[in-house]
Amino acid sequence: MTQPANPALPAPDPVADTAALRDATDRLLVAAAQLDDATAAKPSLLPGWTRGHVLAHLARNADALINVLAGRPMYASGDIRDADIERDAHRTARAHHDDVRDSAARLDGAFAAQSEADWERTVELRNGVTDLAHSIPFRRWIEMELHHVDLGIGYGMDDLPGAFVERELANMAQRFSGHPGVPVSVELRTEDGGSWHTGAPGGAGSDTLVVAGSPTALVGWLTGRSTGSGLSARGPLPVLPSL
Image (cartoon, rainbow, N blue to C red):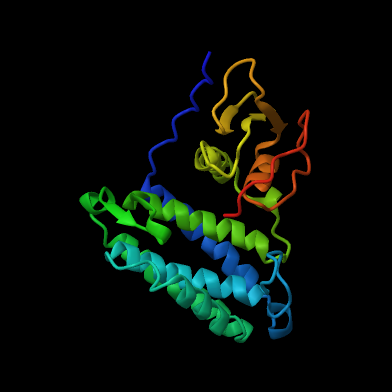
């Protein structure tokens, strides 16, 4: 018997996702406005990155997504992407805040300029990954929510909007489904009876590892924001590929 198929992901709604993204951006900007230069320079929750690195990444990611919508390469190269983040990471807290705000406004303007037909075209992201343009607002929403957590300034996984958590859980299950870096079959099971399969193919009665917990705890593990705290499984959790 084959593994049941995952529930189909809902088609992205770029208008609704853009509205949710604006809200997430506003929340992050309010938090970032409380940083001073010393706290902006302190380590974030991402290894090797300060809070300044996280904020610089968010600003440059907005510009990169504008490139994608315009049919240009997302980044000129991986090395240039990294160099731009490093260049901007050490600025004042005010400069970071204004850059995130202004780059987000530029991206919002690019979203507003898209026609219905534009949203349905195929675009190229990093490393040759392609997707439909209508997925970009949700991709940016992911960046804004998870990196707000990464700043380590009082916004945690439990603060993420429920609608975002549900969507990201399904998204991450799909992302790791059949991934060569996840060689075991995994069933993600939530307390309300939700179930998604990810990792290697598996079937009923196979060696599928059931990992159970709240949607938030599952998303924390799948996105590398936790080591699996709050989850239960009958064996060790697999080490997931980095994002």
